[in-house]
Image (cartoon, rainbow, N blue to C red):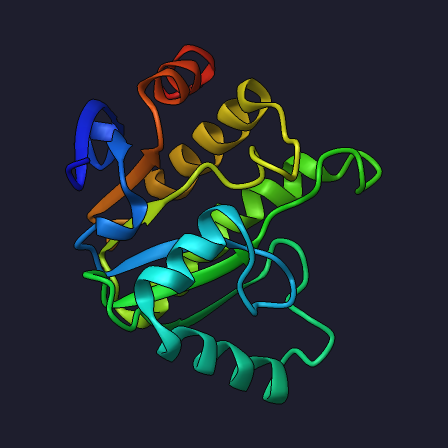
Length: 186
């Protein structure tokens, strides 16, 4: 599979919806849909740790030791090296498990995206690639996630001129098309 194929764009071309391999994105930062332990796992998290090598796990262990001994809270973000990935950094965030946050899932999911963008801005990073956070084993319905994510990204980018490109990278064309069918981009 190539790094990615652009399916559509939004927000004046600043958002691209792509099908491809998140770990192959040559951007300033890829966003990891991590679990709170930050110590790797399955899905996107496992793929990032495998492709990036041991430097990512080492950086995550240091964050656990010094900043988040109980694990990274849902919706929060931290940045590490990208190790052997073509990206420069990995921004780790923990998405909400659908049905486990007393109806606060939309706010928490939006926080994953907005906090990652805010951290990128603070770090001087201009290009990011995101997976579909929480829509895998965390059970967030993809159509509901699309509405939350598209709104959050649109609102953030409408007040920010430092982020040049946001890539939403989907594993399959079917997932990308489902996102686009439900997204609420202006």
